[in-house]
Image (cartoon, rainbow over all chains, first blue to last red; front, side, top):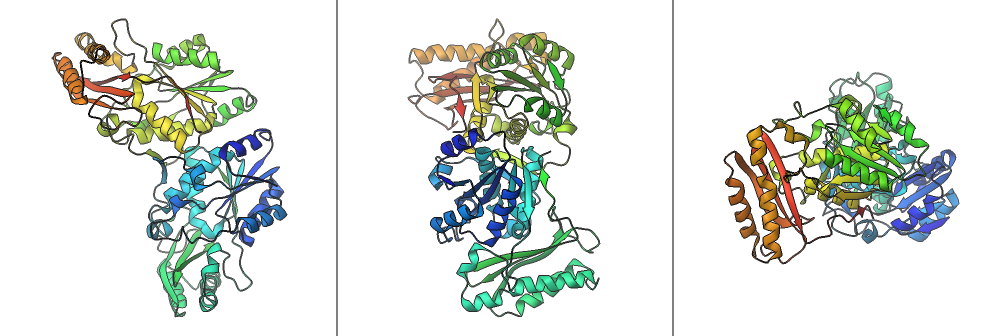
Length: 290
Length: 290
């Protein structure tokens, strides 16, 4: 595995591989099993696997955790190598933003709700940095985890709308043995918060069972059920609980359309966790810019 | 020369030429000598020359001339073939926008003034369609005329900011024998309007002489001079006359910085013409996404 820090060098490295299938796994590092599952999937499907690690300041709000976001490049590099990465691209902020950036990629509508509403500017930051990474690496396939289902929806929309020559491969959320979705932010949790955080997955799993049995009929009923279950944990503070169409993320009333998403964001102290249930779709189908 | 109407077909045609230098000349058709000069330049510098002809609805305002914009594909195809184009890409609106587009590429600041101010949404439409064309054709070099100097500034900024793997080649404005800048919109002009329209270039040429002699000191003086000269023509209605820094297009007071642009937009009846003087720069330098 080669570690590369500059745009010029990653381009030079990839120059000779243009006829091969290039897979990109874009991450913010502090790798966990979720990231590793993306790398393994890319390893299976591509000739060259590029992992990017870049904590992108553009997608953090002024009061968010950019500064304290966990970083450990040495550990990440060891895990990446072991998982079969060919090129680890870890540019500095200065390398990715050498001058004031005036250009922004914005996806409307799909970003109106959920994290798009509670984190203003977040998805513009994501869409813009993913565009940059796509232009730098020119991957044939790019791998994203479905824990960030809205991010997947935003990037698939962007790829279709702008004819990016890349196939987006959404991959299923990887979970701890007790069901908590893997996240680099889980390290922020105190012991007690960590215990209570299991409620996110538990509530969503219960909703899934009830949906399968036809016991929940409207989005309101689903949301009420999930809110009550999460509020049973004293340290949990709900940011949002929403049941929407997927991938357009539009409000629905009855649950007769498919697929739907039940998405939650919950704070435990200063740590904000998200999770979701995608129900009734082929969640893992790939999408490309035609 | 091959004429291609679909995204899939142009990609297929270019697939076998990926190791060659591909040049793209993006136009809205109704070709004139200005367009042909771009094609000739591309022909000299590239192995494969792609001409795109697409009247992009996204960059026209609701009260602008999208419907009546002149079109003549047969004539364009003959001229393109003669000028040495290899692939003429002329997609339908439906082919370029098969579904509602939710993604927008926006360049801030550089679009605050001139046509960015008088045509709200125009440069978002331009940046978005150019992004799509770049993703479809994946050119090594793309050619744009400096009559649309703000467009060149916007696209160069976008290419740098988003790391597009393409070199932008700005090319000098081509003019009629009497100095009027070539434009597809010149056909709208009545005989009398056509005569009076010469004032745009005449005023700018006079300003250039005075700048060279050091007779104009401030941006205000330049603007006042140009306004007076244009207002000497009874059919001319000024939209804007501005003297700014280039390519950032920021207001300046004294003319000691270089390069500067003196940009004008003038209506003759329902026809809106633009022209500009770039002064003191290396206008034709190429710019690439790092």
